[in-house]
Image (tube, rainbow, N blue to C red):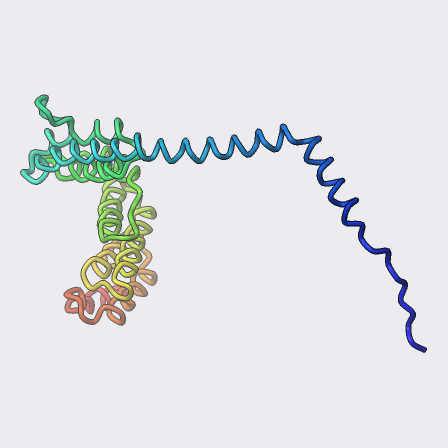
Length: 232
């Protein structure tokens, strides 16, 4: 026997419209207020970005460039603290322009300067290198993690140092979209050396074998066998 379907009542369009209009009229003020608030937020963000963020970024880049000149001349104290005559130094750029790309980069430069001084201040170097947010779009991110690994190692935070060196290799390879034959193998070897110092020869050996297998066109390939042999 064929199944008998019950016939449903047709939708009353006029009634639906009336209910919708009633709902809108009831909550009209709240709805309009919400829409206006959203528009104000979006417009405010666009104006803030146009008239506050962009000029601040430009200003930060200008003051950063002056400190960069001192760093290139290996005058690290002036690069860090300024010269009192137009250059405010990386430390002030990092604090005064936090949230900008230049302010972020100032953290990296400050960390490098503390590490490269005649008497390295590894504690301060680590503090500023940790503040830097590495970029995935350039090799600067890989370099920063390599420097961070050195800073951790010189502060006897060896597990963190190993992780930083591994991250440096990962970022370098990602940037190369495959294999980076300069930074990546060197960073991994540094991680392996620290693991050896910790008595973790098996982990170190695994890293060295991976370097030999993966980075055959790198300068590190020529010396990797000695690391493999001593960790067998």
